[in-house]
Length: 435
Image (cartoon, rainbow, N blue to C red):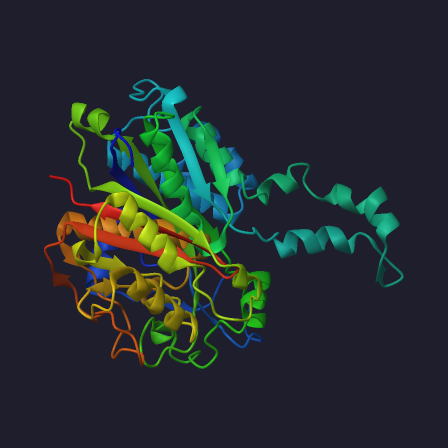
């Protein structure tokens, strides 16, 4: 990356199977399944009625008491990011204003924030109530909406649904005054946000960064959009826990989840000086795109193979050095095939590369996926354990990677992780074991 080395010292995960990195890892190792019948809204008339929900979740317990009123203007995506940031900073041991304003241990001007976000859906019930006040003679009337109807929305309504509000709330709570950025590249957002934050630290633009992504598409509009793209499993409503089967011969579409993760990145000497726990080192980062991704109904890996090769070159490693791959694994027929082609192009035709995907356990987290996958890679290196691929039974035809349904011990110095999105973007990160 550069002469300034960057390490991971804090992990914050908010996922359907558990909150917090430690509990999340334990649930993943156990093979817990979190996908179930959608309860957040009435999905009875949708072809797919399965999702990975965050049950009984609120950001209120993860913000300072003085900030709790602001939760009212947080969309679900924002709440996830705020909770993940709280988990990450507390795990790192770095004290910010949001943790304890009287014992801050980081220079706010050297604290950066990079968060990946998606298209935040408006609360349809809230919007519909206001729209109803602009109905004249049974029809929506634009003049009535402009003169009075729109006034029935809270004055801060728009601020709930802007993608940059995830980083906005996190930086306000934790008083992060360094560079702040929002990346909106779908599923690739988390890897891209973490990679760019690592480069920022490497070139001296910050000493610490909170980076990752979060999203919740578990709403009627999100479900409808994915259904129109024919990406959802519509044949497993009676068996929701096993509906998402990444890289498995029986894969039949993805399942929507909600959640995300934020990771504390830190310049190595700073982390060592304070005796921080170091999960792994960011050794390499790569990004790519595939213009064919504009054809959204055609499966693509967004140039993931190119991104992975760039990350490996950045880390100065070869194919044989990759000890594990933490894959994206949507479970969509066509997408899984394109993804394993990308990994094989990066690591050669090795058929013995241990790999894992977490979507079987928690569903697809979209903009939140990449950060969770990076956290899994860091935990895998830290514990020298490759987690199971939940719901995996037998390899889909043609796949050359090594997935199993059980955790396994493995000596690995490097782990490779990456993701891609409908639309053609991709990002990949190489993590190195730190000793």
